[in-house]
Length: 242
Image (cartoon, rainbow, N blue to C red; front, top):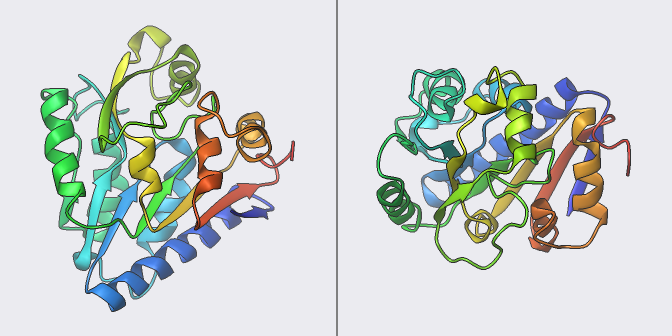
């Protein structure tokens, strides 16, 4: 695992976006197209803004998959991750080949449909973050490290739901859906490369546990240390306890 620490969130995002864009360009040169997984949330906003402005990326040759989504949340809701990706990545970049998780449809059917599409070819680069409770996607502790399913239905724990309120996506914890569709741990680890972006002091304890504690389902993101090509991008605040 490669861990890089930057003075602030802006410089972190610039470096991570450059890394991700380089991997996308390499995939297009090597295989004629690139397949990526895109994360959402407050921690990814600067990254996606920088990424969509990277030069010489032919976004029409990029196929994008969605990492996770709330069950039952309308597309129009400010916290909808479908809306987030449409507004912050898909439309600005001009991506035409994308797979969004529709949390308003039957969750099992969505898991099968998008999972089947995902299995057609390897993912070149996965963009991920780490939650305040150490979650990876919406795989809250204790995470399922063993399932072979590409997507699973999960129940969100209270720490995860409180994070969503703290970031301003919902007014109260009662407004946060209790279930979500999440890419599985094994599917995330199947990506050729993982670019993990984690700014902010509130993530410092999760970073310490993920990078220096045991590899354990109670700290889901700790599993990243088993992957051969992971780069974790931190700022001084998120790296404060290392």
